[in-house]
Length: 168
Image (cartoon, rainbow, N blue to C red; front, side):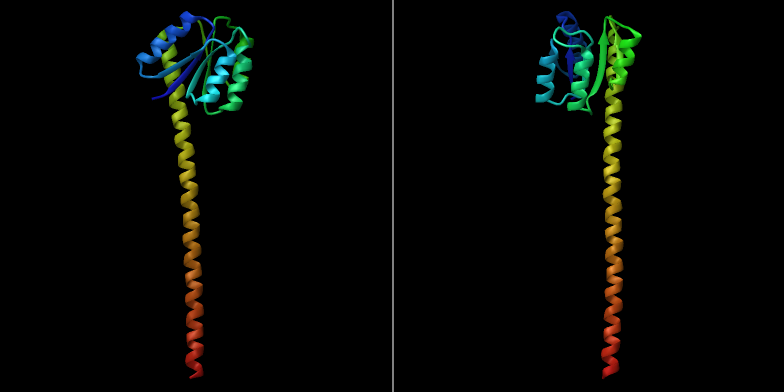
């Protein structure tokens, strides 16, 4: 089950998004302030966070930066009722993975959440495959080193055996 954190100061939005996401099988936590979101994200890994740009105690972009530095693998989706090109560009430059404008249709939110979680799974799979490939290549090197060493030892054995026979 994927864990999602929703950060918004509007309780109706929190409950609406929670309901939509939980109905799709996601585990959902909520936070009404940036400080609460930081505390929750330090205590638990969330696969994805939905962040409002306007929060009572800090800007959402400030929270985005903090969350990214603490949990870079977490997918971060900005959601705002105050859309502007400046907000969008700043959010994406600060490593937001997506930007949604309120009011957003539930289908759109679900589509973006599912796309980002799929991207996260694929990135983790690729990382796992890279590690597996590296380990396999190291094992191949070790096997070839063992073969080379065995060949050298065999040659030494044969030379010393030949020398012993010559001495007889």
